[in-house]
Image (cartoon, rainbow, N blue to C red; front, side, top):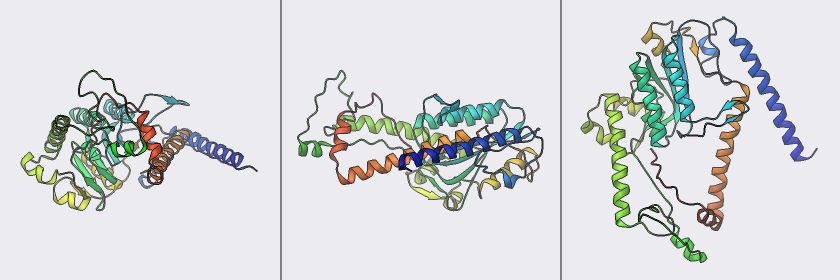
Length: 336
């Protein structure tokens, strides 16, 4: 059998298995049998819930970005829009007494982080408890969206912190000169190409970006200071962009307790008077195909990043050509 055919058959088999699991989960969701917490804490294909009050679970995995509201086979793509909708859905659901926000993210764009943070604020304003459970990493934007929670739970080795802002652009002038590449530019507004990779940054441009970065940094500090009840003057020494462990964060009052997802669920249950042994977790209706496509997308992004790095190390010329055909965006996305 040819290699291409084998791959196609393998994909079809995986799709069949995913669809069968999804159908099983949908039928399972119609029953009223309580499912033990240990069997549904991080159910890969999405968990079901029994009727009655419970705890909503929303997962924020990977970079925090705003993604297009497109659909594939009826399943919504990942992104902050999807997360905000889930949080607002739980806010309006009378069954949901509290929400556990499971964060496993290195950060992302400021706009997307702020939209999720505002959704958390709305939940709290409506009287619902929000407990954050940090996974492997909840740094920068991952910490930003966690800061307003009623309580933050992190593992001892969770990588968190990184309270800071960064924006960066390539300077390929030396590479362009080496290969005889020049850039023709027509612009209106002297700062339109402020992150141009074909020339050095001017002093005026650097000042503009520093002021922009400082403003966003102040916004970040304000959220953390309010959410953690730490005065800004006490926060500044630890808000220098460094990463820390969950154990260190506990000593610095950036998290409240050490533990995993189950610890966060137990805290949420106790906060709202539910049985911590069987709190009835209410998750989104993610089923087999959606999870399969998400995994394929994550693997694809990871592979593309790896291929780009390998190409840059082996031969930088294609990267130069790529940049030459990419028009700089009319805005700068500040990364947290």
